[in-house]
Image (cartoon, rainbow, N blue to C red; front, top):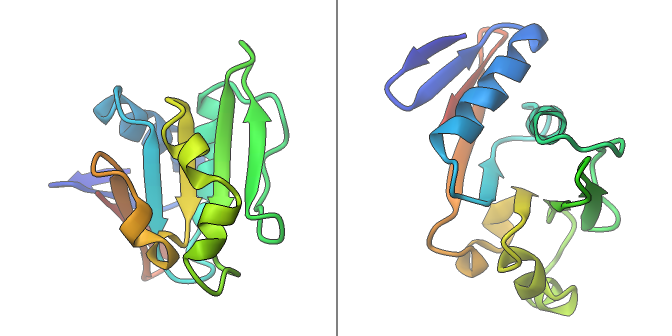
Length: 140
């Protein structure tokens, strides 16, 4: 893992745990993390690693069809994982009660936040992921 300004460069999957730890330590009081990036860039894989670092005991996976998954940590604190890829309009986020999740004080990891960007709280951490030369660039 190399660090440049507010960018982390991931050269292999084995570096993800240290990158996840670094990101969580840089934002200890933040709970909303919005992941922007193209399909296949590794958003879900990175979120799985973040969940592992937080002590999630459930198997984390993409909530593509259900929009949100709830995982439990070892101390029974919920972690929420959203995938808004399939929504057609922002009102669908209202239908699932996004406010209850986003303002719960629990971790929320959001894939495809551009679909509901107007609903993101001001204190959201925006993570931009891209692939370059078989490496992942993680900017925040």
